[in-house]
Image 1 (cartoon, rainbow, N blue to C red):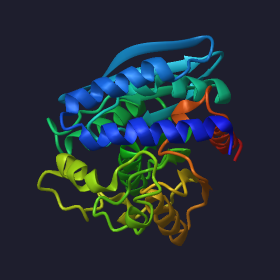
Image 2: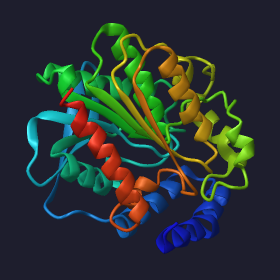
Image 3: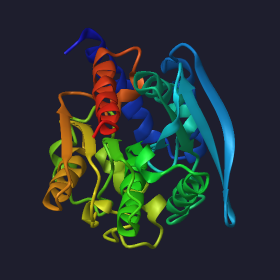
Length: 303
């Protein structure tokens, strides 16, 4: 464990976790996360951020095109940000995604889906479905798209993936950082890691879940893609921390995908906070994890 990892874990437990425990207003949480992203996340050189709007049917979904350095115009990463369905945006994740673009030579398109509790299921899922369809309509072939996301965004990634697989429109490959795949909250790590997770308070996860779900059934495969079917699933790459409360959402998803014949690479890292990859440029373990994800993405286009 690096000194910076120890320092980050201490800061997460003493500041981040306590703030998550006491924050009751979503808007306040959004401002705090935006400040963290602005002052703590690092931008690689030659990064370019282009806001856009993806219009499909009756929906207009804001999005951000992200690149760093020379990138391919034919390939893209469609990335769905996390934040518990209530905070976050492409702008909070843009620096991490610029790093991913620089490591892979691929542009990233990140949609801004509607957040809870102002908007509940299925609004966020409908937004990412619509945004993805716009890209297909613009001429991007499914096998030139990599689908990715983190945390709650990982939930939307696999809900979208199940739809795409069922339609025969699966992307080239899929990756996710600590995806939240079981909103029925049956993973044993929710209890086993309740005192080990340096960032996420297990005692508030049901409240957070309900802000998104409303009256929806938490075992519905569209809200808990852990239980979904993925016919002809493309290769999948997953990363999570061994000590986070959502560890089993990753491990059980990997088991489900493997049982359906998917080729899955699952990396479990030790003693790191939830979605530590956002600290790329500051934390050595973040850079190592990002390089591993980038190798998977690059290799996917050689298969």
